[in-house]
Image (cartoon, rainbow, N blue to C red; front, top):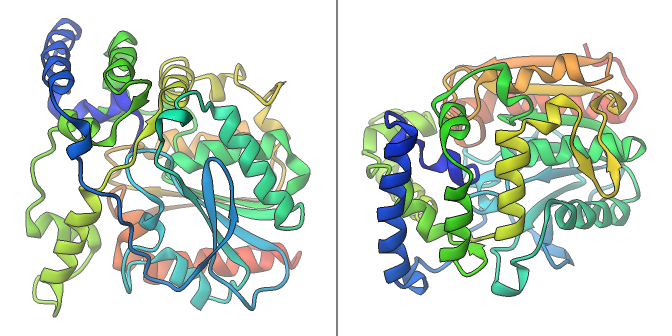
Length: 363
């Protein structure tokens, strides 16, 4: 669930740079000859009742708490390969439901739109601007819960508008790409930037989710692998339906604006600008030391997408004096979909958030 270059790592992780270019050129030719309109229709299924509270160019703001009051909690879903139902996948596999059951009532999710051709020039600033509109709509201050690629975006937002973020949760989010190494980050450093540009050209200015799935070449997930990811036993009743639901979700990618995509690949993954103090957003340089509110960092021990060190590096970059870290025994998607993580870890985070919003000690 990350932008282009990392998406290629399962197929090309063992290749040299020249081999990658050659293999990618062949894939591009096949993609250009294909019809991206044949991709799987995007029909996301939400588990928890909700309503659309606000329509913006980049997203629908979904409200899950009609009786909510107090400071809002905004889950910032990743803007990458899959849609925002990652946060509300299925019963017992929904961090939205876990946060609600733990007492958070004023709860919202950013449901990013799949990029249409007229969105091809949307940039990182475009999404940050709409995120700012949402926070203002929620009262001008919110707790941000950031998932995967939503994490760096929320961290940038918190540094740009520190007075608007009461507390911050970063789960499986890349902050300092150079702080650790994963198969993903190794390829991100070695693959030429031209690969990303060519993929945008093939998509007519957007990066097609169907193309990314083709290029990823990840083998179809076996039932046991999905059960391990979702943290359910082999003999659990209804496991076949759950596996089918995961496969359907996984094969329903979203498209990304080409401008946004190229910025993420270059600025975040290749140049590591966020961690080195060279990132700029909405006309201002971003200084992570300006993030001084409470921060909870949740990493996955076996994360194949974001090495734990790449997230936990935030502890030395932010200005907050109230930091909590936890490493869960799971994979990347297990952080958000795993039954054990949802049942045990996220309620603990919710209690921490409730104490934060009330101004109580959080240790």
